[in-house]
Structures are given as C-alpha cells and as structure tokens.
Image 1 (cartoon, rainbow, N blue to C red):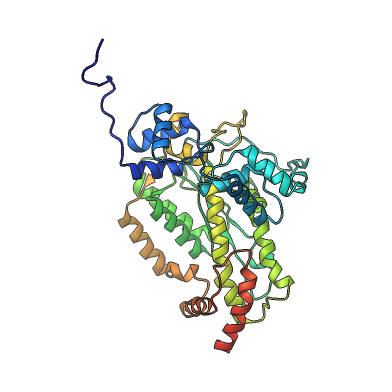
Image 2: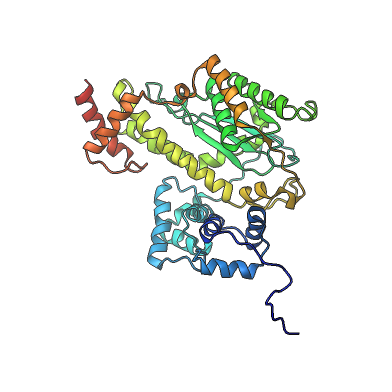
Amino acid sequence: MPNPTGKNGHGVKQYPPDDILKAHLVKNASKRVKEKLLEIKKEFGLEISGETLRKIERRLEVRTVRRNGLTEEEAVAAVISQVEKDINQNNGPRFVKDVLALQNILLPRNFIRNVMLEACPEGFDKRVPSSRKQKIKRIALTSIGPYAEFCADGHEKLAPQALKMGGNVGLPIYGYKDKFSGYVFLLKTIPDCRSAGAIGHLFLNMVEELKHAPLQLTTDAGAETVWESAIQGSIREVFTPEVDVNSYPPHRTIPSVHNTPIEGFWPWWKLKMGLNARERILSGEEAGLYNGDLQIHRNLFNWIFPRLLQESLDLFRDYWNSHRIRTQDKKLLPSGHIPSHVLVVPEEYGYIDCSVPVDQDAIDEIRQHLTEEVGPAEDFFKWNDADFEEICTQVHHDLELPPITWENSWDIFTPMARELRNLLE
C-alpha cells in the first residue's frame, strides 16, 4: 500500500548535531558495531540499525579500518614510529593497533603484524609467553557493577629507592581501578605516593572530577591511606546512609598481593611502557649526563621527566580503557569486553551502576578540612618551585630547543643544565 506521508511507523528520530555525533563516533571508532549502537542509545536516546550507522559514518567521514584515509607509506610509517618507541620490544601488534587507534589511525592487525615482522622480527621471539607458574593462589573476582569497588595502590618501580640516581629523584605512581569493568580512573605520578596528605588530595581530586565516589574503596593497610579512607567514609555516611556498612564497608584493607585488580594491572604497565621509561631515564646517568649531587640537575630532572611520564601514563590509561580484554570462560565478571563500554552500559550485562553522587558543596567542605589538617593540594603535587619552573620554560625557549620527548630528553637536558648553571650559580 502506498505511504504518502513517508513515515515508517518508527517515529521521527532526533539526531544530535553532526559535530557532536561525529566526535562520539570518532571516540568509539575501534569498537564493534553492537557496542557503538548501545552507546549511541545510552548517550543520545537514539536507536538505529547497523546499516544506518555505517551510512552516518560515511557521511561524516569517520575513519574506519577500511576507510582510514592513509596511503600505504603513511600507514607503514605510523607502525614504525610506534615500534621505534618500544626499545625493549615488549609490545605486539595488538598493542600497537590499539595505541594507533587512540590517534584515529585505524589499521588492520594483519597489516601491522606484517610491518612489524619486516622491521623487527626478533621482537616476536622475545614475546613468546613464558611458562612461569603463578605462585599465589587466585580466586574468581565478583562485583555487583561499576563503582561498587575501586582498588587503589601505589607503584614504586620508578621511585627514588628503585632508580637510585642520587638526590632522591624519582617518579612514584598512584592509581585507581574499577574492579567490575577494569576501567582505570586515574594514573598519576606524584612526588611521594607514601604521603597520606598527597593521597587524600589525589582521591578527592578524582571524586571532584567524576562527581561520584565508589561504594567501596580497597587498599592495602599503608599509612598513606589514612585520609583517603576518612574521606571515603565521610562521603558514604552523608550520601548513602541507607547502605549497610557491614555488607558494603566504605573502605577495606587487604594485603597488596590480594588486591589483584590493581596489582595485576601494574605488570602490564611495566611491560608495555614502564620498562621503556625506566631505560630512558637511567640512560642519562649511565652516559654521565646526570649528577645527583647537583641541585640544578635534580631540579631540571623534575622539570623534564614527570611530564614525560605523565604523558605515557595518560596514553596507557587511554589504551587500557579502550582495549578489548580477552575472553575468559571461567571469569564471573564480564570478559571479552572493552572497559569503557561496559562502564557505560552495565545493565546490558545484568549489572547496576553503583556510583555515589557527590555534590560540589560537600567536596569543597572536605577540601577545606583536609587543607587545614595537612596543607593545600599544590604543596603535595609540585615538583619544583614556581620560579625555577618559569626559568626553565624561558631557557628552553631561548635556546630554541624542540618539544621534549623521551627520545630527545637527555639531548635537551644537557644544554639546559649548562645554561641554568650559568644563570643561577
């Protein structure tokens, strides 16, 4: 029967503006069609078919693996650039594929593998899985949904006691990971990850950014968790009085080796990026470019390397949250998923969102109390005083040095150290 109105019985769909829709599609370009459709429905209340999605992607010129907009030479160069950054050759084609996707460079895994085989075949031999047996008995993890439990811990493989470069220079890291989804909410390098004041402010910073807190926080029993625990307890007391603290305690302490969601994450960071960062850092001392007895060298180290490490942490966090976790048949929690996807649509997997909304007034009140007790946040997170930071920025500009990367970091350190000594001594 003719349909003179042109309406198909499904109603008129309300699409968001093209720029907003395109930004969403680019962000999720590496996900599967079903996952994209679910997130479009959750974000915009819009139900469309896979074919409609493909038409929209073509119209908005959203890149895909098949339509990546690259010549073969450009694609090869993109892969080689990632291979050259991995001086330990720990990263395989899947990691390279996921990291390139974060830069909106979408390439088939087989293409990447072939380029890597041609460029560095020895890396594949090095990455053959080891046969080491797990020493600690593990049990299946359980959770009722995202935000039900955040697991937090410090990582000190780049801390002063690990680097041993002199002058107490180092780059400790602290992180928060959602037990249910595997999503990493925060990775931050800070001057001291054993400071209770620093961790208290760090936790509050995260809550302020998310506008939510977890139902439960799990850490080891270290002294650095004192304020973190107190803040979490206060939030639960005010915003979830109906939740039984015996069933869902605000804060739980367990030995680090059993805090597996975050403890099991650190080896991946170390393997994929941490070892490369450590080798880059230590190469300066080994080459005689760094002297820990010199205050200018220590301060300049703190001007260059924390920002480089934070860039790597941000990149690895983005990679982790957008990569697909392998399927595990015996796992009780979701598997074969992308953390950022299951975090957004837990109901599709039969779970619930357990986030605790926290208003800004409460955050401000907690911040004021914490500052009165331990000092302001900036005191715990600054690597140098403001004057030295400003001088370094000016020297870097005056010497017409290029942007700082891991690859040229010590090449920039040397002339800057020389110029700073001329100015300050």
